[in-house]
Image (cartoon, rainbow, N blue to C red; front, side, top):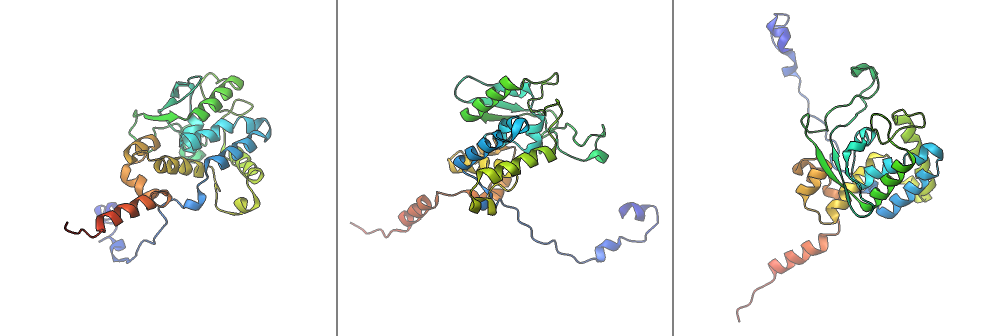
Length: 254
């Protein structure tokens, strides 16, 4: 509109006369979507039972839960990102890029995905993420069975191609139906792969990991982290109430 005014196509900006209030939207994670570690283990075991394609995706989904990777970060994961993958104990990822799905009309190559910098980070900035011992085992087994190709990509399909959304969503929903009880399946619990990332971040916060550290691992700002996951932080109410009661207890002079 400003350009139209500059070229004398409009005398003034007509949008300023429009009165509109942005509708409220849900900006925090619904705790009902968050799975616990036992449910995740059941889910990953069910993924492993979905044929060769499922076997290739166990560690893929494991990265979303144990390392809080976004799907586009897991898709782009390369062997060089595995900074430390020991035989036992904790390892470390150093993320450098992601490969979000933009659609064929919006990428330079004409493919559905295009490699770019990490979300919310400037080009060239990296993000360290610890690798949980269970994920270390999953990745080690995966690399042994499916060595990376020439480009170093960790997760590929049977023909060496990139994982597409349709394939991993199909495996995820089949595994979810097989792993969960009827009541769990009918609930909001892990309705989509991204909910595994929400579960990871919620687990870190509830384990008492300081928010700045969780924000660094998850690729969030601290303010966004606490706003988005405020409803998922549980188990601290009793201690908070004890402190309030202690602070308001009557003091008597001896």
